[in-house]
Image (cartoon, rainbow, N blue to C red):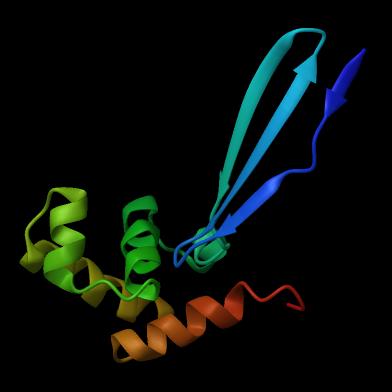
Length: 110
C-alpha cells in the first residue's frame, strides 16, 4: 500500500520548489518539482527567436546585460544587440516597455 505525505512548498524569488516524500512499504521516494512563474514563454507568437525569448526572460527577472551575458556565455554587447532586435520586433523603445509587454502578454486573463 502506497502512502504520500503532504508536500512541502518553498517559494523563492525566481520560482517555487515542491518537495514530496512518498512511502511504499519500507521504501521512501523523495520527489522534487521546481517551477518558475510563466513569463515570456509565449512570446514566440510575437516573432521572437528562442534566444531573444530567453534574453527577455532574464530581463523580466531584473538581470542586467552583463549578468545575462555571464549566464548565457555571451558578451554584454551581444545581449544589447539582441535587445535592440527584440525592441524592434515588439515595437517598443526600451527594456521597460519590453518587460511590460512580456508580462501583459502572459497574463492568465489574456
